[in-house]
Length: 167
Image (cartoon, rainbow, N blue to C red; front, side):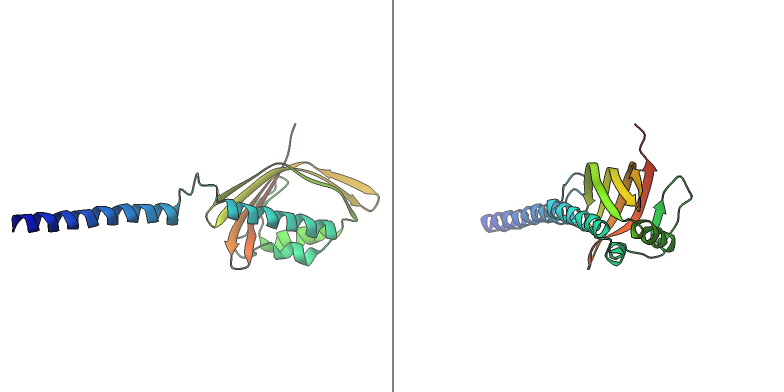
């Protein structure tokens, strides 16, 4: 009887240990280490989205460009050292500026980095944009941060930050 009790206790103890190990493994798989895990598939999705954003600017397709934004009361933008603005001001600015571009001469995103944290991604780069507005050529060298959230309709921008890049 003591042998049976010992065997039963060992089985129960083994099940508890295996259950704890599996729970830890599942948490590691489900939660991942959100800070250090690279999220390679999501990172590629964000890169593809950024490429599509660039293509919409090159094509002059303002509706497509706007579709990459998740405009809501939470949307924010910083640019030109001015106070923060929201969705309506950002959309108006995007349509006015990029809608007036007559030619995209150069659209480089240097030192590009994408950091994914689950369903949130931060894309940073140094712009080297050469945009023609009629006869005028404008060169934009900014530090840009785009914050994305993964939605049922893909990755959408919820924040933009543009600061002049100094050499």
